[in-house]
Length: 201
Image (tube, rainbow, N blue to C red):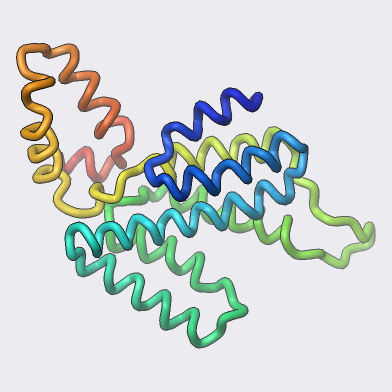
């Protein structure tokens, strides 16, 4: 995957801060710093989930999102050096919102393992640091964007209500053109939905 295609991938990212952080991942990847790219990718994916929860609290007064954030702050305040809250965050977001599917969670657990291997030295007989290969890191980046970073936070709340409100606001642009409506719904909503959200819609 070349720099252009990674930059094109970055355009799918929902949050502008996440998009800025993603540039560091792309830079590390293009410079063949695959360990650094993996470590940064995990951090960016975790903070993106925090951004989504914060948006849900600020924009929709979402009680589940507020409770999850409070729990994570409590866990972190007890041990600032521990990263245990990060995987706990993934578990709670999957359990209490519609942002992550079970597939997403399995992938994020794998990314977490790769981050740990890349970030922490292991004293084995070879005395070498783990070196993820280009293909593995590329796959991690693509799956992070498609499974997490591209998803808007409103998928966690009343998706049908949000969809209707969005269509109402875009009515003049979409009225009288079924192909435009289909493309709009696919690009803005359907392509980013988990199967659970699809069933709800």
